[in-house]
Image (cartoon, helix red, strand yellow):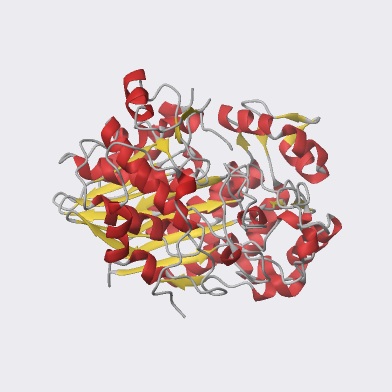
Length: 549
């Protein structure tokens, strides 16, 4: 059981300095960030170090071949920004890569091999955050990750379990099998995993910036590997990749200001709608059966509206109409206190005022009050399974987050519309939702992996945080979870989290309850007190028993 070590690593910095804190999904990544803070770096420098270290020690969740969102707060001028390092579709993408002549999905096209991978954004995100907001040279902030890749790290039980799940896929991929398996078998705890090629790629990134990844030999290896596996990448796809700074979404809820991700994350609009609806109701407690009914109905509606969302750089999305108070009041008025709404009875909205494991999360706050909440991913565990030869870079399978057809859900059972259809240069819709919560007590940073469940986890976490006067981060990250996403029409619950009376109360209102076989999520949270300046961190105990869907 690795939980005590994980929690110790997450809390070590807070206990030592009491003014800074880091929570990440792996103790070695937390240690990397702590090292950078001790060398005089700020939260942004530490975030780069943590993200890069996670790319080495958690290849099943994140890496240089993936993408994500960095939510930043700079204390000096109170600047808040979302750094969008989401993957993009290659320019050569074609419909026949994913749909056959009859319009049916091509099996595995969005999940495995060259057609599954989008152009990575994480390397550009690391460089952007380091150069624009950090204080230390990139070579220094990437040094801990380079050492971990070069010298190796001992595989833990979590790595071994997750690799076992994906063992069959990795075995079919020569480079992935060579690096992540031993004689075709998942690595066992204690195995020293060295990744010298990845160390070299990280070194190029440290020395050359984006040119070290998006140009030269690394770029050529990426293109050759993807295209040999059926993809359609071009060197120009990599050369043209840019991160985008976006204005975060903000919503006020009962005295708290919540800052969260903007499109192409669906999380910001979802939370804006959810908290807007919940302003009109009284919740007894987040896990109370009556409150769970209301929250499930709220989630049903925000996930219904998620269907019309997409990349605003490519399609028109009715953001204002979907977040107007009048529209949100209309949504909450449709919720019955006694009966569940059938999802099939809710039509997809066409607002009148339309405008012309997959994943990992970490949270950082430093002594000056700079803060970062970042959620990064390769999508499915170990992504597409492709490793670009000679680079150590495991590529994502983010093309699965696009919508192939309105009636065809993705691997997370999420449905979409033409707004999220695959198109060259487009960024797929995401559920990643790094979030800040500020009230009179201080500031909370939280987020989690978990595909479509990220939004419900963050919503429940924020509600639990605001429910009681005292701050209890461990209770926050450990609380039992439930989820509704419009379709399938059911409330999903973690095993052992809710008793028979709770389930019976919801079933009496017409809800279908489905219990999962594993717990989900791996929430990472930090909090800094406004009164004392003391910072603390907490890591989800599920880190050793996380569900992978």
